[in-house]
Every structure is written in structure tokens, then in C-alpha cells.
Length: 192
Image (cartoon, rainbow, N blue to C red; front, side, top):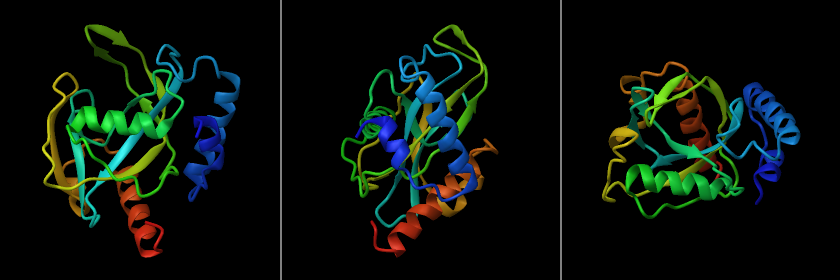
């Protein structure tokens, strides 16, 4: 499904998701020619995979060098209109896991995330926004893992109920806890 239709179809479950959905759609509609590319210096599409084991008690995360914290996988759309395809590509690139289950094809969540100024590849990247829809991805804990060394310093399974010990980005911890809660609620309701 095309990224804009997927964002339109998303059923927000919080004020944050509803407001971010409204803002994303307004910006997308005014910037269709550039929003899929990081060359848009104000805001651009990314897609994240929130990777859990099938029992939903562990989360596979990467230690992201820019954020100096354990983090979900994800990356820039770079022109790709299929958000799930981007999330799967980034999850494989960043963890080395080659096989993911996608228990739902819909978005798990939507968020607009601020990205601080930083240097990447020797060049300055200014402050901007990531439009960050996310998908629930499931993987087996015994899959071989591989670090994407140009971006990350580690990859490992973490206890889903103890992420506060690992995630040092204060603004991201509530996002991850929200995603864990949503995944578990979907399991209880029989939707996954």
C-alpha cells in the first residue's frame, strides 16, 4: 500500500498519534515531490521496525551511534513508497536478521520525531523531523545477528520490561513502552 494511503488508514489510539497523523498528512500533501527524500531538510519519511520475539518479552535493538542509546531499527525511505518494505530493509541491514514475521500489514504506530543536528559521513546534518511510522516485526532469538558498523555499535535482544536500563534517549523510552503495550494488547485481542 502506498505510504500516504497507509497513513490515512491508520487508526490513532492516542492524542499524540492523532495529532501526528494530521500533521504528517498535511505536510505530505504539500510536499509530495520531496517528502520521501532526505534532501527535504525540514521533514521526511522514515520507517521503523519494532522487533520483538514471538512471546513479546524481548525487543531486538541496536546501539545507535548518533543517539548514543539502544534504539529500534529504521531508516529513510529514500524514494520508497512502501513503508513496510523500508522497515524490513532497515531491520535486516541493521541487525543481520534475514527472516521476519509481519503479523500485521498495518502500521503499529505513528510518530513525528525530532532529529538533533549531527555529523554523518563527515558532513553536517541540521535539525529536522522524521515522520516515523512503525511496524511490528517478529524474529526468533536464535537468528544470527550482525552489527551495521557505520551506524551502530551493537545489536542484541533486551528484556522488554527493562528497557529503562538501556534506553538513554528520554523521549524515546515512552515510545518503546507504548509499542510494547500495543503489541501485547493486539496479542490479547487475538489480532496477532
